[in-house]
Length: 117
Image 1 (cartoon, one colour):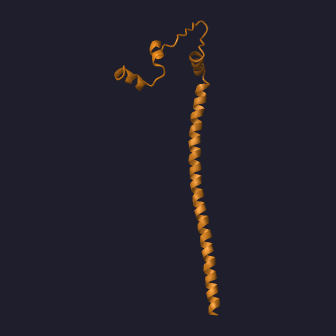
Image 2 (image 1 turned 90 degrees about the vertical axis):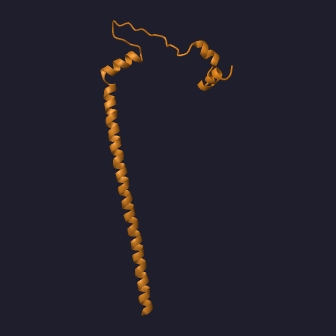
Image 3 (image 1 turned 120 degrees about the horizontal axis):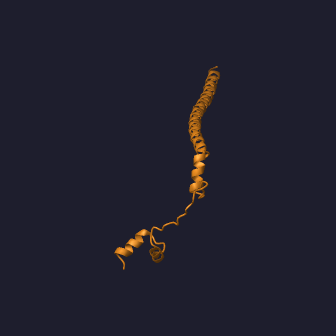
């Protein structure tokens, strides 16, 4: 009789241990699911803000003022009666300095000026 009680006791401990482990695993999984939901909600909020910004930008780009500005600046177009003048680009350095120096880094050109002749 004593052996039967002991086997029953250890069997009950084993069943309760398995039950506890399974219950703990499920609780942990639910906890992590809540974290994933919070992350997804914050992602949705940031995407909604970005969507609003993009809608504002789209409305701005589709406005007649923006289209006219882009046509003038990038395409060189103008209204009827306007004369378009295109000026050549002005170089920042004289062409003889670029030709003699090549494409050397700035520090090397300074080195030549102060150290080497």
